[in-house]
Image (tube, rainbow, N blue to C red; front, top):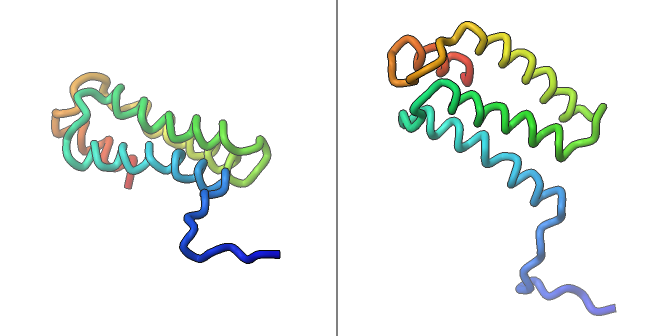
Length: 102
């Protein structure tokens, strides 16, 4: 049986591709928050919620990742509830949002 040539690019496994896709919303949310790209608290929350949605969509219910996402989603909603809705550029809203993603 011929061995694989070390120079032949290998296609990533489906699990690797899912991890790469699922990880992007996290990095995007962190970067947008760090650089002040969010216009509203609702826009910020939508990106964070996408992280939980993806984690639950791409993992089987009852798995550690699914359960962690569900738990973090509940925690996020509890922490986000008192955050004022509207422009994120205000110091109070921005400070609260940054505290959530630490």
